[in-house]
Length: 220
Image 1 (cartoon, rainbow, N blue to C red):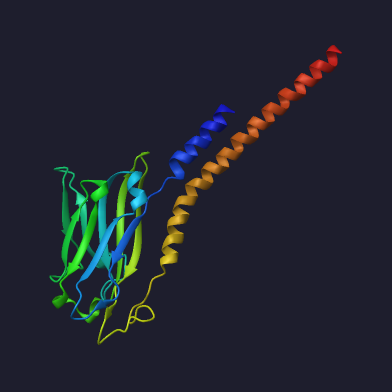
Image 2: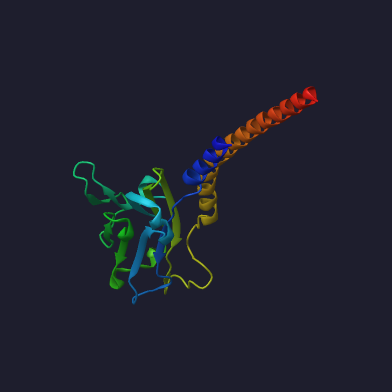
């Protein structure tokens, strides 16, 4: 019974605790008036269970790079192994119009932001973005999660009334399902082990009960 309780506690500690990343952006962006901001940070509740953040990256989909590919990597903030500090690195999808800021020194204040001044916003800035975060939980588990979002520049090119125009929209639900599968695979293994241990304990208790009854019958 103690072993069963230990396995149950281990399961709760290591597989039910998870963290997520959030993506924030203004929608719609009024062409010629609004600036564009894409902001990645840990989900508020997740900050309580994250011990450290190793990296936050932002992707942007464009004609030469589908979202999630190397070509779509815009920028990332990552911990430097040499000095232990964080540095911002630009990817293949870099553009001079995008101003990148970030911080991962503290979990509570961790973020990576993309900013474009209103006079520099183009109709083509109606795009898909992805925030990706690699981190270590307080229970020692290492993980990488991501979340997608989209901007829409409202003006001569888009109306932004019924979703995004001129974009091939990736399924956010599919991304969430993929993340859930990644979590459920180890969970299923632990549940199977937990069930096996419970079965063995039940068999042992049954044998002991039968033995006691037999012994009592002999004595009587």
